[in-house]
Length: 114
Length: 113
Image (cartoon, rainbow over all chains, first blue to last red; front, side, top):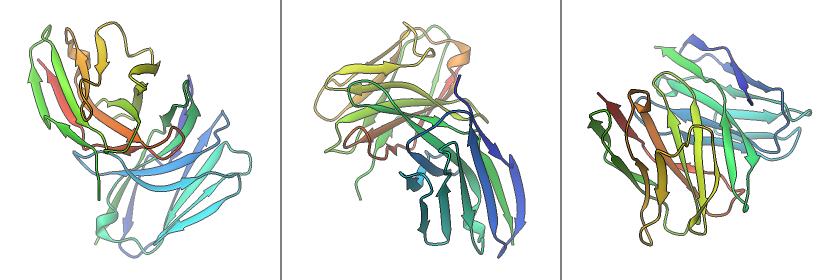
């Protein structure tokens, strides 16, 4: 089946450091999304990317949609303790009747040390 | 800001029992989804629903599963005879149009004993 691999699986960083995580796929996606999930909660959308090569920022977050449409990265600058959580990439795949489904990545667990 | 809500937040049931998980999507949204996340694993697509019918379902969504929009606001997932391996977080999501970003609810944790 379709698989999105994220790296690293987990990371411990010091508060104030920059963070970079990647998502790769063997399949092409036309839309990539990045979500954050905190314990016991649902995924919350961070950034959506619609065009190959697109670079988009949302506050301290920056994400890019790879030229090949098979990868994406997410950067977090100047990390703070509330950045703790699991970050998931998701590729959007067209279904039927105008619906789309998300294929989620394996997740990157981020822990920030104060 | 409008949000997707789900009830209950936690459901404990005995194996073989039926459960109904409830979702209230964002009010002007037309496309609805259920996803599942087994503890410590990634989020997996179960089913999409539009215009009062299932648009697509995954291989996980077998005959034990069904979805319904019983009225203008609720969207439900029923598991007819729960199995131990159905224990997971179940997330409802909705979107205004098919290609727009999906907004997820807080999830229902289902524990099957």
